[in-house]
Image (cartoon, rainbow, N blue to C red; front, top):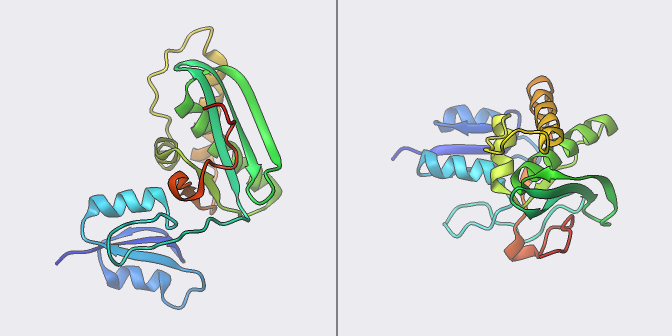
Amino acid sequence: MKKYYVVWQGVKTGIFSSWDECKQYVIGIPGAKYRSFPSKEEAEQAFASGPFVNRTKKNTVFATNYVEESICVDAACSGNPGWMEYRGVYTKTGKELFHVGPMIGTNNIGEFLAIVHALAWLQQQNKSLPIYSDSVTAIKWVKEKKANTTLVRNAETERVWQLVERAEAWLRTHHYTNEIMKWETEQWGEIKADFGRK
């Protein structure tokens, strides 16, 4: 039966269609995180959501704890579109590292900008900490280097559009090794960067 191999952490990360190819990136590598999946679709979902997801299927990575030495990001938006802001905090202490907004935008855009801001901030600090987001959409957009938004561009949204274009350009021109992982709200409670306005 055909299997697909996800490597979240190793010499090379990604989805591989053979164990022969996958094993050269993980065997003997300290801290390597990898797993096999029966379908390409499951492998793609697993790669996008990160290794610390509680999956119910057998033989999958299971983690009940998040990495404290990390950055959590979140966005808040009043309306959709509406007044949006985002921020990043140091997971272990909750200390705010950056905060942008408010400006007119959408929650997904805010989540996307927050991840890219965290990547750029970490690169400036020369740190390789992982980043947590509770937005599957934003994580996907970052991996694709494109914010797939339908937000209308006008005078009201121009500021956020400029930030989106800058973030997309940063992703195209910079290489990063930080893991971007899905925050599991059901297991761990609200993400540490949450604005507490629900």
